[in-house]
Length: 179
Ligand code: IMP
Image (cartoon, rainbow, N blue to C red; front, side):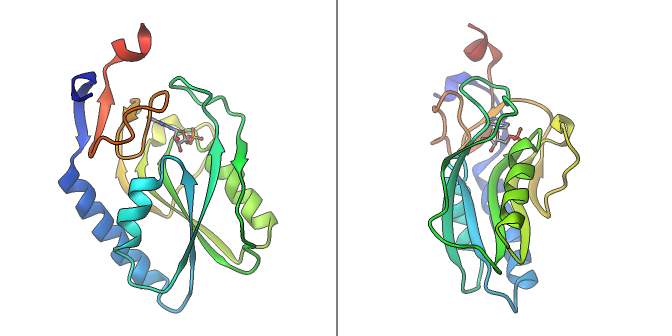
């Protein structure tokens, strides 16, 4: 698996540091609130797990499965809910946990949906941000690392469902998705 990676962009040690820093900020900002962390599956899994343990607050967690890729390396722009929340978010302070924001099609659609469902506030924490990929303006409140417009895998991020279990984030060799 490691042979399919051309370079490591975010190391395991950097990820540990990112989770500590973001967890600390979120703990401070939500001091007098009881937020709900909503992870967007499947990419959020390792990040949600590590980040949540760095947040020193009482909060609950929920998951939703959305998809804008139908295999491959480009967003289709068509956001589908594959599995919805099992709780109401009316009046809640929602913190969405994302692996990466690229075009922002996914996150803008979900933020609009959550506001429509009556959330009191909706903020985003994302491990990675690819601002050069934006098709619509959007700035996440909490960003682990800004990365260039390259297709990355690992630590939850996949190519055709593989590589999610890499402990770091790396750039996939183009020959893997070009053949
Ligand atoms: P967006 O809607 O284009 O912002 O994309 C968001 C979703 O696309 C993310 O949650 C990922 O699942 C996927 N995605 C975007 N960029 C990458 C990448 O470089 N590698 C793997 N998945 C990606």
